[in-house]
Every structure is written in C-alpha cells, then in structure tokens.
Image 1 (cartoon, rainbow, N blue to C red):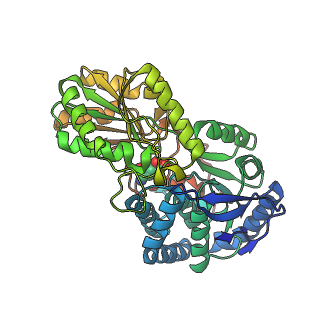
Image 2 (cartoon, rainbow, N blue to C red):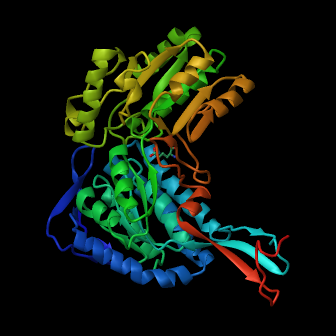
Image 3 (cartoon, rainbow, N blue to C red):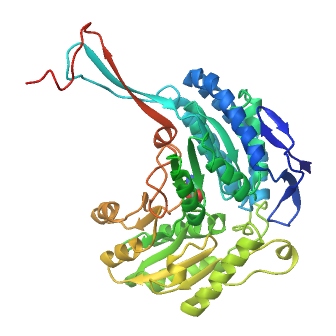
Amino acid sequence: MKDYGLYINGEWVDSESSRRFETRSPIDGRVLATFPLATPGDVERAIDAAEAAFPAWKRTPAPRRGEILLRAAQIMRARKQELGELVTTEMGKVIAEGKGDVQESIDFLEYIAGEGRRMLGETTPSELPNKFCMTVRQPIGVVGCITPWNFPTAIPIWKIGAALITGNTIVFKPASLTPLCVARLVEIFEEAGLPPGVLNFVTGSGSAVGNAIVESPRVQAISFTGGVPAGREIYQKAAKFLKSVELELGGKNPQIVMPDANLDLALEGVLFGAFGTAGQRCTATSRLILHQDIYDKFLGMLVDRVEKFKVGNPLDPETDMGPVVDQAAGEGIMSYIEIGKGEAKLRFGGERLTGGLYDQGFYIQPTIFETEHGTRISCEEIFGPVLSVIKVGSYEEAIEVANDVEYGLSSSIYTRDVNLAFRAIDDLVTGITYINAPTIGAEVHLPFGGTKNTGNGGREAGTAAIDEFTEIKTVFVDYSNRLQKAQIEHD
Ligand code: UN1
C-alpha cells in the first residue's frame, strides 16, 4: 500500500494539508492506497504549473504530441492485464470489463494520436480576388478535467487524450473512489515522456478541489462527467467566467423489444446492458420496454437467466456481476429498491447479499421490476443493477415511453423490420441509438453524449473531442497587395 502525493509540474509532491483519504476495494473493503485531501492552494500550484507549461506544449507539433500519446497506449497495452485487475480491484466491475475499460483507453489514445495528423480546419473561397480563407484550430489553454469512478481509466483518458493532442495543459481531479487508477495513468504518461506541468493531478473533494478548478479564472474550459446536480452547479459557476463547459451526465436508457425481434439476441443484449458493470454506467439499460405480444415470454426468458447469475468476486472470470462501488452507492440503490417495492411488482432479486465475501463489500442481486411507465424507478437514474420492465401496446407507445424521461443518452431497439429500425433512429431522442445491440458499448472514434439533462449539447470522443478542446481561428490572407473591402466592394 502506498501513500501518494499530488502530481504537479512533473513531480509527486506533498499537499499543503496533511489530511488524507483512503481508496478501498469494493470487493472486500481492503485499503489500496491513500491520497491527499488537497486544498484550493494546491490547485493554484497545479494551475501555475499548467500555465507555465502551456506555451511550449502549444508550440509542440500535434503529431509529436501524438507520439507521446501513442507511447502511453503501448505501455498500457503491455500492462493491460495488470491495469485491468487494478480497475476491477478499485472499482468492482468484473475482470472482462476491467480489461475492457483499459482497452477503451488504449483505443482512444491510438485514435486521438492519429487525429494529431489531421485536426482538420476548413478552406473556402473568398468573396474577393487574391484572398485566401481558412480556419485553424488552437488549444484553449489550461483546462480542468473532473471524472467519475465508473470508468476509472477510459473516461479520464477520453479527456486527457483529447486535451493533450489539441495542445492544452491540464489540471485533473479524479473521483475520490478511484484515484489509484488515474495515478497509474499519470505515471504512464510520465514514462511516455510527457513534459512536466502538462498534466497535473490533484486529489480531494469536489467542494475543495473541484470548486477551485471551476472557480479559477485561469482555467479556460471544464470537462466533467458525473451526476446532474454536480453538473448543474459546475455549469452555473463556470458561467460567471463564460468558460466552455462540457457535461456528460445521467441516463435512463431504454431497450425496446418488438415482437419480430430475435428474442435470444435481445435477451443477451439486455443482460449485458442492464447488469454489466452492475448497472453503474451512464449508458446502462435501466428500462426494458416490451411489446405486449412477447411480454410474458421474454420476461420469462429473462428471469430464467438472471436466476443463474453469479454475483461475487469480480476478479474471478466466472463471475457475472461484482459488488457496487461502495456502501453509500449500495444504500442509495437499496432505497430505490424499497421505493420500487411500494410502487411496482418485484419480479426478481431486490436483496442485498450476505455471508462470506458478501459481508465485506456491498453486493446486490440483479433486480427486475415490472412497472407502469411513470413510476420513480422507471424514470429516475438509479445507477445500479435494477431494471424496470414496461409493457407497451405498439411501436408508437414504445417510442413515447422511451422519450418521456429527463435524460437522453442511449437507446436501443430490437426488430428485424428495417423500416421500423430506421424510423426509430429518427424517433428516439437520445445522443446514441443502437439497432439490435444493447445500450452500452460505444466506440471511441464516434461522438459520445446525449440530449436533455444528459448534458449541455456537447459530445466527447470521436472528432467531437477535437471540437471540445479547441478554439477555432478564422484566418484571412490577402495577397492582392491592395486594400480590399469585403461587403463594400459590391454593387
Ligand atoms: C459511461 O457509462 O459513463 O458505451 C461511459 C459504453 C462505454 C462508455 C460508457 N463505452 O458503455
């Protein structure tokens, strides 16, 4: 077990404060490492370092910056097993998903390193002769990244990779439940040759560290993934400074199953979508919208499978679902299950598991409710292994129910009717829609994000990541050797 410092200006340093917090494994409560509860003064030092490093990093050609990211990806690939185990140990998702988290990080770094050779702008004709018009991309400056615990490497890497390739320097605050995974990433970037001050890592609370990042006029942009209340607060605080803010918030993602669907495929989809990562994904399938013609049959198939689900140690490859991330998260999920018992019909699960390893963490049964649309469990984000099953009479009703929630991240429909599938692409009001695939599993070279309360309109990953972290400069080059007057020289 190691006592970490903060990483500022290329060195691991002490915080101004001697207060520390522990990161524990959700598997058995074991303490994995301790980190400083940093102060606003520590954040100021990190911003100083990021500001000082910015001019040289901005001048470094983007393909050169990309080489460092690629080296980081290579290091991660060589250590994929070890890093995957760390993700599983610190966060609790099953080992296949822990390694998937790391693979998503590698994929993103490789993709975005290549974008360093593109970073496309536009060239257009001018309305005047002998004049050239184009746009180029410039970094924003010092950016603040604040990340959640559910993808302890992938979400940090989406932000770090995109901010770095575009020439920004970073002050980074990880979720306090998974700082060790991010500390490991910081070490990897150091090993890959990232210059001092370009990436600074400050641990601690949202109220001290997060706030100091958001409230600093020297931090030009914020990228945040987390819950709606924190996202709203960040957006409001950043508005004072007119900062650019990118928010990725909650979801209440539906999987619709039509009568003509391949039901076996739809079953695999909902199992993975609802109970993968113990439902702790923004993209998790938390609503299963079933057409009445297949309702009883499909629900029966689902319950049969869930009955055989193995909940246990996520490091064991045979385990289907691990613990939830901590006691507080577990209690929150259990209180939703209690609400569900009062307003809906519990079809499976609903209990916290006890005995043996179960007593050392917070393990919950995969839980299935049959409910009307409009109940709290069918509308509010639970962020746990709780699925609401809703019966509908038609495609139109399915779409109406699917869209009638405050979020709009991901959605899915299973049907073999190609016309209906394309209609659903138009009709589902979400940032991501899957046809015959679950609501989870986004790929890194495509934009990721959602509508309504899922965010503020931006997208991460894909080329959208370049937009997030660059300012566009419009450039006019006049090679006529005379004063040409746009708009005026027109009759
Ligand atoms: C999240 O749920 O916070 O599409 C991110 C997916 C993953 C990313 C999810 N690739 O489920």
